[in-house]
Length: 472
Image (tube, rainbow, N blue to C red; front, side):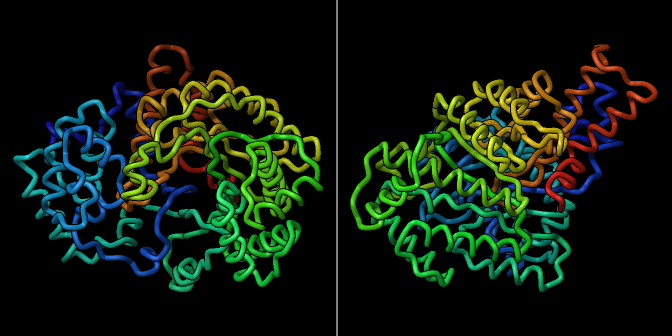
């Protein structure tokens, strides 16, 4: 339809952008190398009971918008509110989200997942709700695996704790499902020493699953290495670390052994001891990744669970986190330099949450590129609050000016939803529009060899760079 909101040339504002997208980006498969999908849902080929479950369940982006629009909490997270009541409140909120990426995402998902070419608002809510639910209930292609097939997903990397059994990854692999689902090593809890009782409980669980009797710090490291071997056997090629800031305190082995004994014994640590322990663990994890040939990812800069009243009521990841301000550049440089000096710096992706750090990290990359791998140190794609058109453009502009956009490994969903794959399309359209505009402005040549280079650049950033970088 010519008057569709989500039309074939959506976001593509010039002829060159349209050519780049339709001829070089649109048809490529998706490599989603960082997400939070629930592996069991893939293993079970989960069937969703309604559009509300797949669209609003766990989606704190939408909850934040609904709360901002004056919607009561029971319509966001309430257990006693019907799926229709929640969907109706979301539909009432959507027309108030103009200029928020949720408006674009909502209609991209309706169009690409359900073939629905209507705008969601209070007048269309019921028919859209019923049409989506009819497909979810009656069409065998509208399941967890069905959505992955629809979006031409080739590989996904979930986010998994070292103590996880990975039983569902094994089930998916043995089922013959054509989409590769690989685990990602996320050992954050092994350095979370703020609450001694929680740390002790985690270490005991680690001991149980690894078969290593843990009574001292070196035992814990041995147990983690055993679990890393297991993750490797399940196809893992990446680690991921969610940190507030980079940690690079000076420490001695004796200090770390003493700190472990203290916190494992139930005594609270000082702030200095906490920072030293985290610094030691980051180095140990980085060295383990290097030995495995894995890529390490660092997501930093969030301040979480700011609303203590709602945290007590709902728990984490419910929409009460925000961008933090951390003066972390020197610590990041010191951390990378220590690994580089020891010859233990593996491929690394740095994701910042505060946009003011785009240029900071973009200049950090060049300090540690060593010519062994193209784009060895990466500036990660726009993350969380920045994974929208403006955030993507700012990240790509910083990388373009201060590094090599051509070597960028591209987009990911960072999502728990099977309807988030259009974020890859949104990114590809934004990338093509950025390059197409430069070409039409006469800032990038587009003929002969240079045209081939631009075309390949689009294909590489959309797909091939990630495929080659991660050795999938």
